[in-house]
Length: 196
Image 1: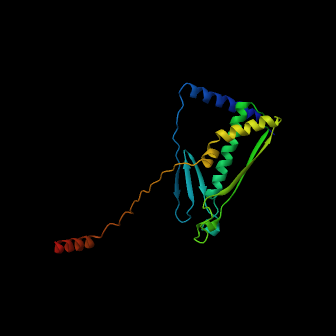
Image 2: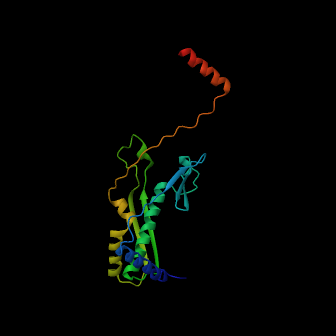
Image 3: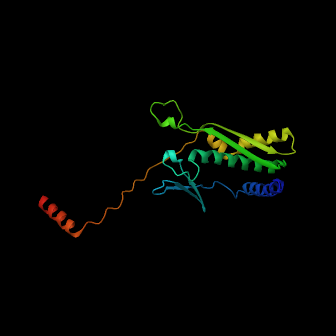
């Protein structure tokens, strides 16, 4: 079984190349985009990001088919993925050897929050916590320094911890009307002529 150390050497090269491009002024802000559509009959949500697709769904007790994780579950997974990646980046930069790395993320969501009798309950996931499991010969001090860097630089961890301004809008499109039959067109024209 292989460990992560060969990958960390490759990651170090990629991260250092990225830093060199930043130093040269070659890298700046990059736009991010996702598109989500609700699909007919099932109501599943299909997320499209670049050339990738992810399906989210609800459990059967919420009119879903359990074809994918719910949005709150996916958010925990996104946090775990970003934490894991951030640990890999920082381990590569700091030359901390890691044989294996797993992150567990947990949280709570309460369906009662949308009920008027429970206005005190948050509608969002809460009590979010994570545990990082690292197998490494590194010292506790080296791992603590790794943790400190991850806490500072993990994008999704910081997105969730710090207030964000989010703008939104709704684009209402009316469905296309069925074409009127010729007899209906003539009758409508006659009514308009009489009204004039």
